[in-house]
Image (cartoon, rainbow, N blue to C red; front, side, top):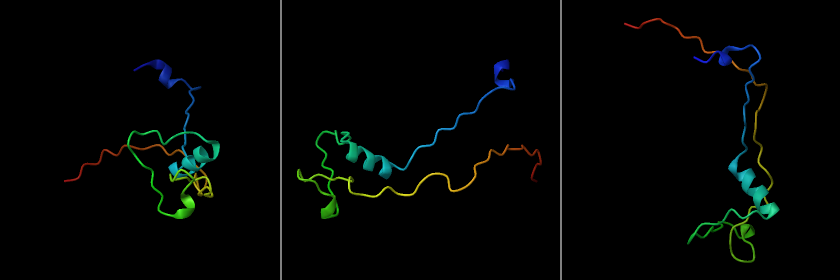
Length: 85
């Protein structure tokens, strides 16, 4: 194994992503085109989620609560060599 993996100054980076509903709200509000599929219609279930071209929009939605709900910790996994008979 590479000895660089065991140095004391290694850094662990954790990337967290948001809920897809919040991402769609952001894309609709910024005008980013994510509805770029051939022969697919993004239909809306509710009339308030339809824009003038008849397609779905989430631009009027409020973002949903997401993310970590409390303190985060890293807990090492300890391998237990107990055998079950």
